[in-house]
Length: 134
Image 1: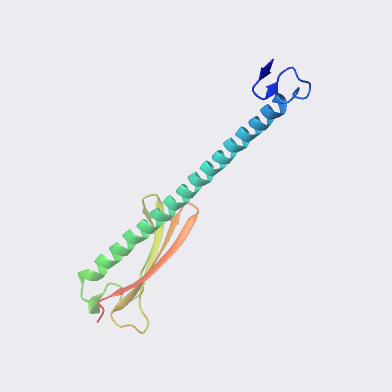
Image 2: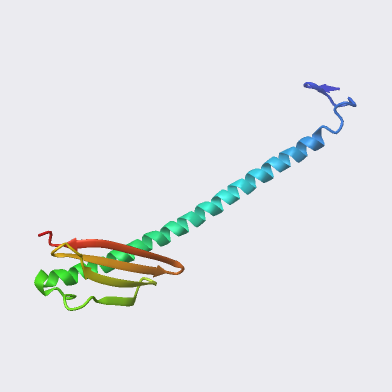
């Protein structure tokens, strides 16, 4: 009996299905492993980016707090004029931040603000300059 191009009773075709089935099983297994690894890496990357974004937003909150303190009084009466204040281990949204404010060297009416955020094992330092611009 002949089905398509293969004669099922032929001796040359005997054992053809077993290697084909093994090859197909290996192909499917490697595809599943590849998709699983890509999914795991994508998840790890999303977790990392989420931590980075949270650290940045916590630093931005600390920066906003410092700007609010600076804008309350005139520049000549700024709150850190007699010393450089630090805020250490302030807890915010499950993280801790340290803040340091100083006058910008050589730039009148401008302050440098540094915020270090500790979010689990992630530690990031953010810094910027701000001032009246005059």
